Length: 143
Image 1: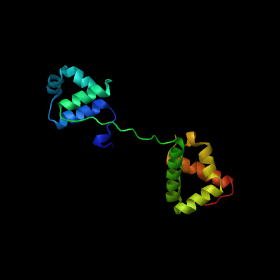
Image 2: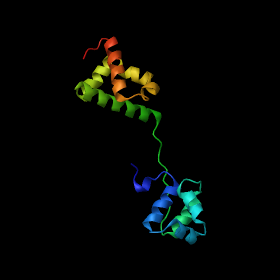
Image 3: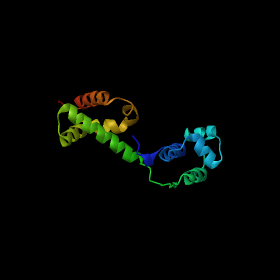
Image 4: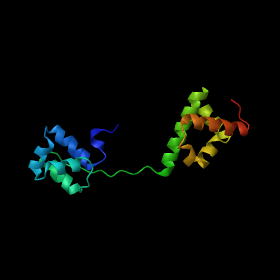
């Protein structure tokens, strides 16, 4: 769930601020010189510029602030996926995280995950665990 300050569109931000201000779409439209139908379209994702959003928000006593943040790299996403799989594997197999990591490393499970990550990410954790168990067993692992 997103926090109020992490809404995904400018229109969603405008809707949130309009509601906070206790205004209807018609009232906001009158305040900014637009029809109620146009306000509805904006709130539901019609494209607007940050300048237009800033103007609308300003009329309601709010200020638009944009923040640029670094995008997670593919390496970070891959690491997060692999760690989540290790956590799940450890839980299902009743292992500590370090033992699960050691087992998956020793018997080629991590290597398999890295190589077939695109496919594995589309599967459930249960299916990934079954696949890892097979790969590790084929490489000498026994749990």
